[in-house]
Image 1: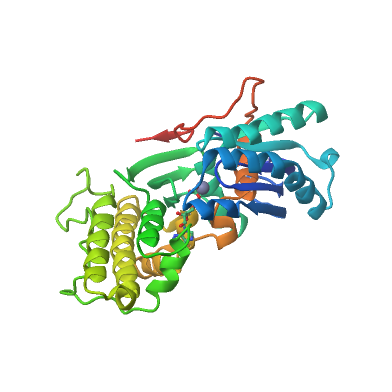
Image 2: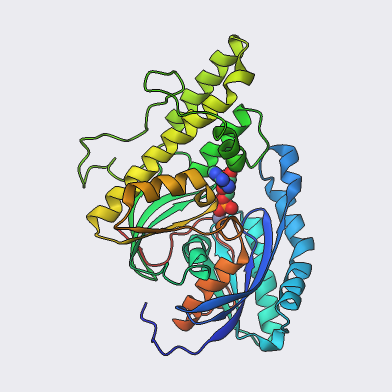
Length: 360
Ligand code: KG4
Ligand code: ZN
């Protein structure tokens, strides 16, 4: 996707409604140099009551939140619609009813105000999030995308060109965090609660029952083997379930909760850090860019940094930009806008869609 170096700076409104955050943001700049002018995130707390996102409720909340979110983003940026060059909106992947609120609203707003609409893939948005805080978080790099719905390892030679190296065969990393959190009686979404609980415990010793096997981490694995980059977390989740049951039966769950959380997190992190290190080494990258909600896990960031220092710099977004937000959609939208992409009138929400420019 060639983009001329001499691209003029543009101002773009980003809209994100793929899951349970109604978010709007204004970003100004070029695909290589951009600044965030505002970011509003309305997080739908109601889903905590159900221990997971209820799609129908999510759609309804987006409907009531989208107009105030966009208005607040423009107000915070001290801009009006007349100051915008385009609107970027997440059109895939995600909950289709939730996405539809964003795409329908963006198209209506664009049509009535004569603004082009740029469809953005949510996962490409996660890759751009870090760029808003670190201008050096630009290709070429190794990317680790770890969210509630996805776990992917990519090699990124240029924006818009994503080589798929590996992904999870079952649960996403965030999903595993959330399920283990539920087993341990922690609120949803559980990732940050597991991280906090794990901090209270020491790493379990090699022979300790809470030292869980590292999934898909064969020392003898070679590039080209299917398990060289792929991950799997469902076996780890089951091992945690057995540990929780054993602790319950012994009447010791309270005493062992932190140890189990630590054992789980260590196993997951060891696996991800090794796979990222393999990818950076084989593709000779000196940068790693992390994205997605799990990327704000400090222990994961530290483990990857430790393994790759000093040759490789690891970039991770701050929590506000790591979890779902419209700033990352606006940032990716700037790139796609500069590349000439525009939504057709038939553009609509899609629950699943490969990242544009992905290859293997
Ligand atoms: O990217 P995101 O906001 O939504 C999706 O696109 O899925 O990611 C949400 C996921 C949840 O599974 C949440 O538990 C996880 O990110 N998460 C974390 C942490 N903060 C959020 N996982 C581990 N450690 C954290 N500190
Ligand atoms: Zn996401």
